[in-house]
Image (tube, rainbow, N blue to C red):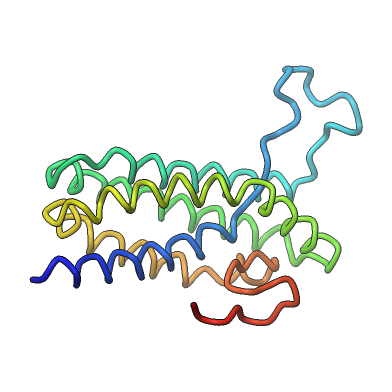
Length: 177
């Protein structure tokens, strides 16, 4: 197959992965000092904790992609992605059990994503650029990437919580580039 075809598929897959993953943005828990969260201003609400967990899983995905150096490591990332997808599905069940979020919470989660999204996009983007330069590795991981992306797209609760990167600030779909 032509390398341009791989690059096109990788770009589309990376974009869909990022859009699905980016919808899970969050910030680190404020209890990093080990105080147990005794101070009210540092206590994380349960729904925000779930968003933080999703952001941690996003980081796992980016780290997995960054580990791809050749076709062999790309194959290993395939099973890693399967494991992370399972974790996302379990997280989605916890989010569904936590119930819907109101408009203010949706806005809060969007702001949390905006604070971290650029860095995560850069990390995933750098990994995808490296993968584009290695057609053998791209071929080895392509099926797993597509399966992972489809799994993420199928998790409705991320959209229900208003964490859908495919929308602009007004909630309208962003125009195609």
